[in-house]
Length: 118
Image 1 (spheres, rainbow, N blue to C red):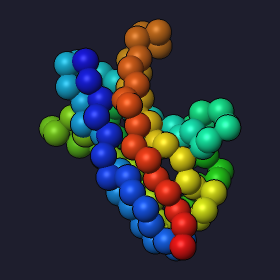
Image 2: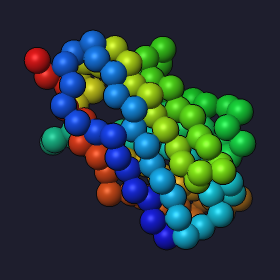
Image 3: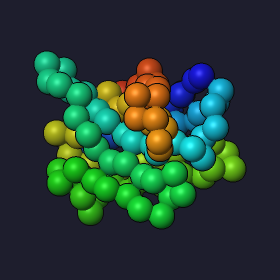
């Protein structure tokens, strides 16, 4: 089982980034997918989640209307489009896969760093 995030980097405030998370080793379409983030000295926090069919998504209030989560089951990939980035979005971003009927069955990626700074 593997989740590999990419797409992070350094961006100026107001800029955009698109994160990707490629899954392998499990049946991707049987898992809901989420993005979390963790800033230095802070706990990991929820950012966004999407159902296994990609129809429904939920967002943290802090990113609503700026971030969009999506998935492509044919490519076993989940995305996070991040617009209007702020300094407070600086964190390491992780994707998580969670089985739709076995919540104890979940996996984490290693994360990708996003730094928003001028």
